[in-house]
Image 1: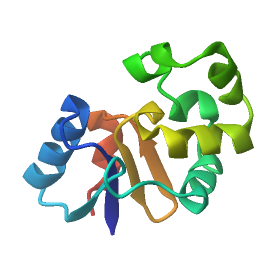
Image 2 (image 1 turned 180 degrees about the vertical axis):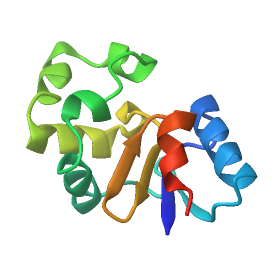
Image 3 (image 1 turned 90 degrees about the vertical axis):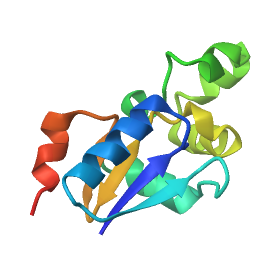
Image 4 (image 1 turned 30 degrees about the horizontal axis):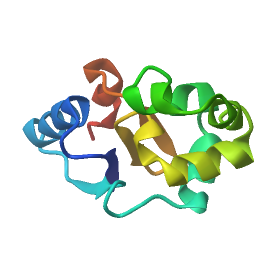
Length: 115
């Protein structure tokens, strides 16, 4: 089962969802703005990728953070709390299929999802 995490109005999430649909790959969408994101999920993701990959340091949410909050993003425990408070900090989309985790959208990396 493929789960794609993000927010529905994000253009990159839209591209990823469209690509999955065009490839006829079933997926579940998790809107972490509305449904939230939990410690267990974020901890699991960090076993497969780094904070540097998972946190979007180029977006408006990052730029609006205080210097103190930006420092919180350097430690896994405090970064998890920060991402739960501000899910827009998470780079989108995050795609999870079994133990495979893809952050961001690239057709090349998504090709591996085909059965």
